[in-house]
Amino acid sequence: MSLNVVDKLLLSVALIDLAGIFLWIGGCLHLAYTKMDLMLEHLKNCSAIMTRAPLRHAGPWGKLLLVGGIAGIVTFPGFYLKRGELSSEDLAHFPASLKRKLAVLHWSVIGLLLVMVSFGVAVKSGSV
Image (tube, rainbow, N blue to C red; front, side, top):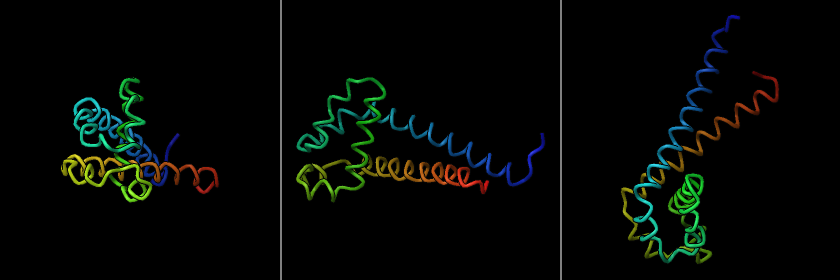
């Protein structure tokens, strides 16, 4: 069976996207196992995180969920600040380099998931 150029291109993009998801999971787990105490210490007055803090003892999946929650709160703090679930002092004292890493992780997973969803829609509609 021979693939034409378009099929090869789409397969390449899909494989790169899947590899990106695995790299993202690895990056999140690396942060979870190396920087979790630091992140939780800086967000100790954040009720949105402290309710999720027990997830750190739930194995890799729990750590992944907790890092994802922290990344979402650091990337889009306005929602949590309005609801009073995030302290502006905690956010101001959060390390800038770690905040940047979490924001990059959050935006990259949004992009990777958008690529996956667009592939799913294209396959479902029959255009691919």
